[in-house]
Length: 150
Image (cartoon, rainbow, N blue to C red; front, side, top):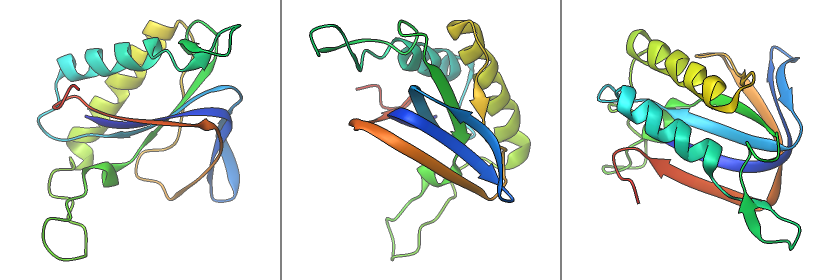
């Protein structure tokens, strides 16, 4: 699994010019899934995201997690995180899972995040043409890959 995590002041997802989900302070998480992803990847990524200390404490030091500030999470599926540009200029998406594999993994990931956070996780809609609006706070943007845990 791959994720791009952005600390936001607000974020929303629109589908067909209607707001599907929106959050205030918290994290916007774009998630890409590949066939090799397992429950271990889901657990690791969820734990890292909710405990990522990127919100400022009283001394303006990024030392607090989204869970600690009782922030929200908006998780949006994004197969393009598995784009390969090894050959040519047109990205290939061979590593990105097809819907029949990706949707159950994505749903398990959302459930795990909700359980770990103790609250509802806001989402986009898998496979939909979404318009994502955000105010990136910082900006703070972090990339994670469960197959490359640096």
